[in-house]
Amino acid sequence: MMMESIISLKNVAVSYKQNKSFFRSKKYFALKDITFEVYPGETLGIVGRNGAGKSTLLKLLAGIIRQDKGEVIFNTNSVSLLSLGVGFDSNLTGKDNSLISGMLLGYKKKEIERLYDEIKDFSGLGDFYDRPVKTYSSGMRSRLAFSIAIFASPDVLLVDEVLGVGDASFKEKAESVLLEKINSNMTVIIVSHSENQVSALANRVVWIDNGSVRKCGPAEEVFPEYNINVGFSSHGLRVENYDLHPDFYFYFLVEKVSEGIVYFNFFLFNLNDNPIYDVTLVTEGEETLFQLPLPSPFTFKKFPQIKTSSVSKYKGGSVGIGKESKVFVINEEGHKIEILNFFLKKNV
Amino acid sequence: MRIKSFFSVVLVKAFLNLKSETSNNKFSYMWWILEPLLHMSAYYFVFSFLLDRGGPGYGSFLLMGLVPWLWFSKTVNKASFSLIQGRSLMNKMYILKIFFPITIVLQSLIKQVFVFAVLFFLIWGLGVEFSKESLWVILIIIVELLLILSVSLFFAVVVPFFRDFSIVVPIAMQFMMFCSGIFFSYKEVPERLHAWFFLNPMAVVLKGFRDVLIDKTIPSFDELTYVVVFSIVLVLFSFCLYKKLDYKIAKAVLE
Image 1: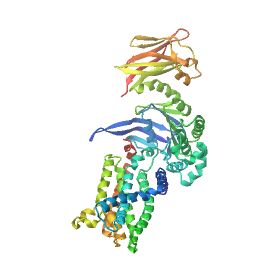
Image 2: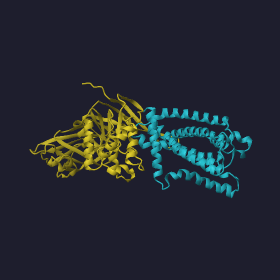
Image 3: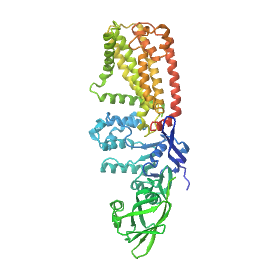
Image 4: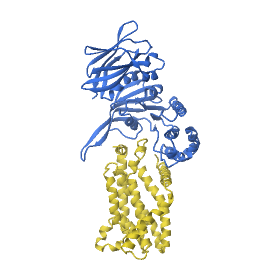
């Protein structure tokens, strides 16, 4: 099925200038080569670690900046960024701030004045709505910001890590309004580094790494590889030719990289909750044996239904950059099976 | 954004900015008047008392220079940094960049209407009598507004690209302050240097105020035409810069 895309990016690059000295300045590419399409009505997740270029990409999609290379085609002129704290003036009341923020979002003065009560109710600010924003807690500020922004109905809504809003009950309210928007005809783009948020909401995920698109597809296809890589990308490394057994969860925690050797710990468990016996890492014919896993609340929080995930941390792995490595486990029946095959490469 | 809705946002923002600005100080709106009066007292002390200059009517003479000068210098200073100060907003949504300096100019105009009203009352209290020539002051105010708009728009768009201007602007303002004849009359400048002296548009504006209010003459239209042409050329040039650099500004303010 071919659909007309609502936003389309082709080989887009964006650079910033860094002043070095009086005459010299260096170009720094925040986005190097971005190509993907956004289809009407879908919910697209954009993931990447800090510094991968997510916020530059958001600004590009919101029409705030323009690309230096490549092509961006908008088939709509109504894109807006739902982002918290759109420069509130802290001396002014919540009401005055809603007026100016709303007008900047494109409302008429009268329309906002009609929305005052709704914004006040939704934000749950009560009497604080008529007090200066400088008297607010940070949670109250984000509640106000969210409540103003959520009344806008653009064709494409860009959401920037928005769900970390206020207390638990407001969070629930915020999530349900966002879900309403997602279930309507609106196109929603969610930018986040959290797998949980994105995989729950998005139909499709674009993974940005080092200013380029690493992978694009359904959440269940992108996240396993994203998780394998996420520990390495901050060290300028990437996992090439990796092959993970679909029954297993594997997550690298990189400790350090020195002289071409990567030292790491990892989480490993069976997704069907079958116990794992000895784990071996084979690299360049050398074998390392891992025996007793350590407790791992990190993975148990993510997979509470899998008991073995609570004790799944292994320490002391090391592999060379550019060397092929394999991980084997001995399963219940005493069979040795290969569960991961990977190859680390330097990012260019 | 349509022109009409653009200006309604500018208007609302300007009023809210004034509200915000005054909410921090105890004397709030009183400062609009107190500030020029304090400046006047300081100059009066130095020039009239210590240097024994000026003579009768020097107080109202000073006020007539200081009030328009402060309007000009404070607005231009503030507008110069308006784009950099608006960086978080312009990086959250698309917004015409000219919005920021225009808001500052409008905001100070609203304030200035009250300040001028009080100024006229004050100089009347100090013994200045108004005549039918005094009405020309409205023209002088409009010419000054145009000048303020042009210089503000220009500096605002230049500063994000050449941050060094943020140091140059205050120095330029200081230099202009001494060259505009705030505490001395243009009559004290040798005749042969008048061509140089009136190259400075603010010197022309201040002379205009004193011509119509103190000397009770019709303003010099030749000189005012020079200021108007200067301002229009600068406004048009700045418009081109805003148009050309619109998307670059959002990046430049972060660099």
